[in-house]
Length: 477
Image (cartoon, rainbow, N blue to C red; front, side, top):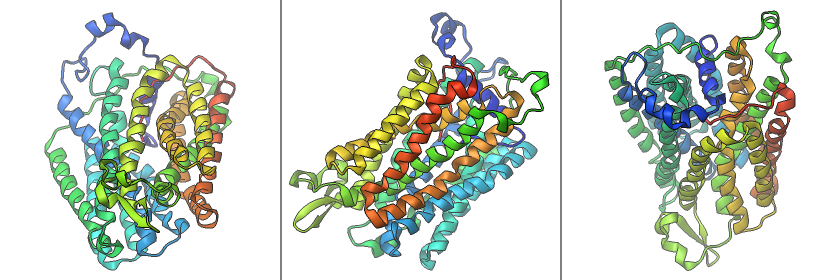
């Protein structure tokens, strides 16, 4: 995610490289004569700084991946409905919403190094809070920890994404962001695995609950150490070049961004996309445990389910357990999400982004219908494929939404990112449908969300007045 209210020139630069075709980068002569991927025009090499910043991509994906496997634990331990457990997502996205503007102000006022350290301290405090929260054992205590962690992650995401664009040759900015995204993808895969190891146990939910604080205490120790490393390291303050060239005509500067249809619909599309993503991630385990058919004897000791702990016996048949579902989420769901981002970089450099996004979102509409129809293993495959098609949506909506807004893109970006509140609200509706009508039908909620995103993609040329933009994947979420 990218947001910063007054210093969002970084965002404009980042989106320039998202929107810029990559033909010049792929040309052999360019590669022979271009500066190093991590070397700026003044000759300085920033590979160490880039490696440190990339560790932040891994960190926030790891934390997000752990949060996504929490819901089922709280349903079992606190006897919550699916709708009630969705307060976890509400607290998570509320933290981002509340801290977006303060994070941008602090980074602008005191520098990006200070912003990173402040974010790491907040993450550590939120993680350490899980120690007393486990003893308190009330839902509000855990929600507070989730919210504080996400407040800290807001600082990191605000700073890390645009910072990668200036740590080397400007023409290779999109390449650097994609490299950083690989760390993000690894974190998404490991998060559910680590969370599943501690949030679920063969000894029952009570035993698992007593271990809930352990992974967070471990993350807190690592984060504190990382904050010390950043504190002792001098981070270069590099100003981005003025290459975006999307200034509006003089006579148009007084026009409100809300008069631009492609921006307004980007806010709407982002709201519904994050809502769909949050709901699918949050209720993946519920769906697998309650809706997937029984597995055969051979699956009892399967690596993909984490061994015998990955199955449970119900009425003489073996079904995937909560712990097994977390393994599937990591090994298949988030791996396909990472694969979608990797391939999206190439696809979006060849085909207009609005068209790719429209098709991907439409395909996810069909995936959700396939899940709702209760087609057994076919529905599970549809659920996995939805991760692949979701992968490009957040950065592409962002880039298309601020296209052509010039200086006003700084303000526009803050509204597009604040639209992530959809991830706090609509999963509760999905949980309610799951409680009343079953988890399969609950996926009709993200179906409607993807329909809105698809409509935005196909209508974007008309909304923006241009059809000649080719977008390469360059953001992350």
